[in-house]
Length: 99
Image (cartoon, rainbow, N blue to C red; front, side, top):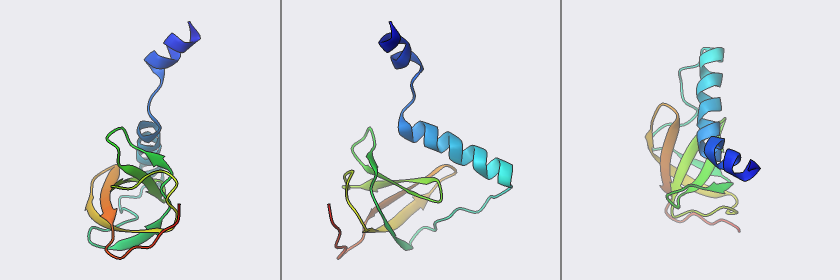
């Protein structure tokens, strides 16, 4: 019974984080994003998204990283696009990371 309830009401980790990011930007009055398209950043991949992309976060903003997997550490990524509550990225050329 509890499992059925959890399945009906549970949200994915990425949905919860996106909600938290939206709420934090509203309450702090911030409209600028912590990342910019075309720039490179170093991140840790902490989760896997439902589509198989890796998930990283910078200042609470979710970043979906193509071809990355949970557990990758110090991955250099290049931001492809920035939306209201998430960004998309790919592993930067020549990036060396640990697992």
